[in-house]
Image (cartoon, rainbow, N blue to C red; front, side, top):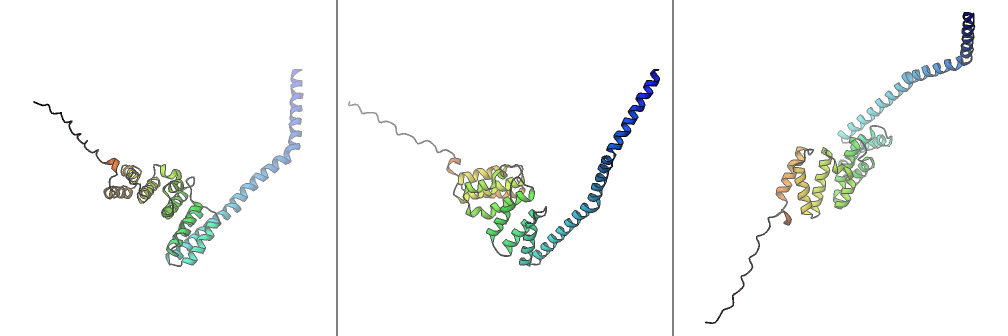
Length: 236
């Protein structure tokens, strides 16, 4: 008897599953079709288009670099500006070339600094961080020491090559501003900075040899002798 009931229950479950499958089958098939279609679109449409766009952008950059190397500054500047305006992955690199064109071709350091400052930042990648450092170099003569430090921000505190270059710029600005003690302090730190490139260390040593020693770095002067008190003469 129990076998009969079990068989009936089994038939009921199978019929219920069959009815559920009939009801939801179109949605399952539809989901599978959407998934297959998405994969096909990505593989055969989106990826080829993205690759073609990447190749086209690379070709544009190569053509602009070739114009720069040939001294065709106007053509190179227009081409680099177009690449920068597209805000692609190549835009930061194109901005460095654009600044080079503006500096070499037109002698416009202010325009070059503005181009680099527009993409520069400590939160970006290597090109953005290098752009910030270059912009600070171009503007160093027109900025005060506090303004220069504010421009460089956290870049000057990093234990990296660019951080060392930033600190070297601050040291040079301190010396130019007449803050000899600060300049010598910064150069002394650079001299023993493990992250500083060899050229920075050499320039720091040369600067320390050339910059006069500040008063607070000199040996303390010998104390002056106070004259001995005269003993009053006693009459004999």
